[in-house]
Image 1 (cartoon, rainbow, N blue to C red):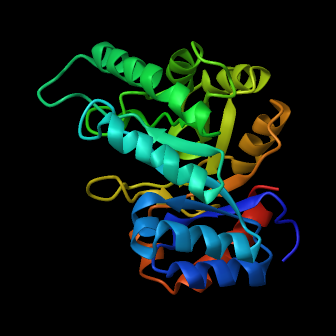
Image 2: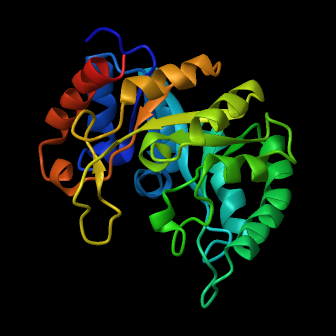
Image 3: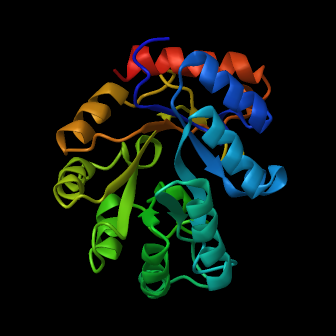
Length: 270
């Protein structure tokens, strides 16, 4: 398949595929990159995963995820995530920062906790050659998953650090609704802080729990091509990673989903 030079498939999009099958399919289809998740990597084995993707010539575009600074994860787990990213050869660890602390109602205070945790983690990540990418999540996740809801908020957390240490993820699913996001994308690009660009469409109604509502490319209301052009105009030239959490897709044959996603990327993004 042509025109896939920047395409990357996030492992969760086709989580039904065992890692060796995913790698083989990427090689066959000419997909140059994969975004990996810590849990399936640990299941397959960190060193075995690193060797598998390296021998196949694939780039690991991101590792998901670190963060959850306000709730469950501690500094040891986040340093371990950095070490895993370094072992896999990826420069980018995606951070989902965490929602309100148990019993909490103060979002600014939660963001202050996140800022403090970043101050501890960023130097360690830099020493390992890994940059931290703060991902703002849609506001519906603010309470339980991520108190960082906009690119402006993510940039405010990143800006105390060098751009090579801490940047942001631009994920269409989470930011497409925000009329301030285009200006934030331009600012992030000018500062060199766009560390990852991820795609998913917005479809309704959302499923129960909302976590698995990310729509297949072209099925929803997001102008994916316009977002790609916007991020390109900001100076970003890196991978474009498709990350879908979708029960309907997970129930299908994984190879079919991968091929369909690649076709839709060409049709709706390029």
